Image (spheres, one colour):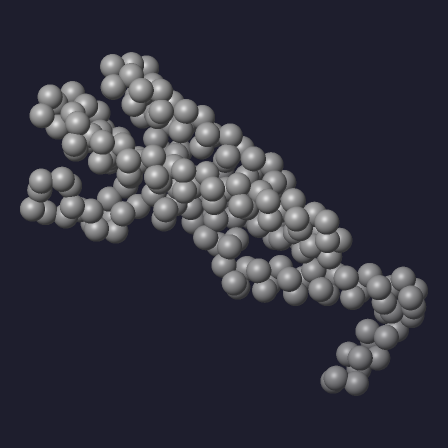
Length: 202
């Protein structure tokens, strides 16, 4: 499930990057590529997360700076305006294009690294258990995201947090230990053991 999500993210990021390259190769004349990117700009910006935000950005030849400047939502329209301006077409437009390209390439690399890690984890049976439990525990967060209550960025932040990993890890460990004990002792003996432990604890 997690692997499929990352593959879909990679597919979309590559498609966005290809449209961006085609737009730049046309010198901004092929508006259809720009329209495609603008139509999907919110999705791309959300997928980028913090990697798509410049905390303090000073536009070329300006004496002020933007706080939390979004690379796709804000810079893409600025790039279009720069390409349409004869004076700004070379220097300023190239700066915008370079920043957008670097951001997209960096993001694609991050997603590819995540996919490699997932593929590597699949070779470890204990990881299967942990990943499976994590997927089940993360269902409520993804349901809230599908309802629009949580953004994709917030969901990613939650399931990537140390608290979530510890919580899902403890559940996986408890499930593994319970399964082993049940196989070794049998279900009835396992219940008797739990009852004795609870009785002694009280």
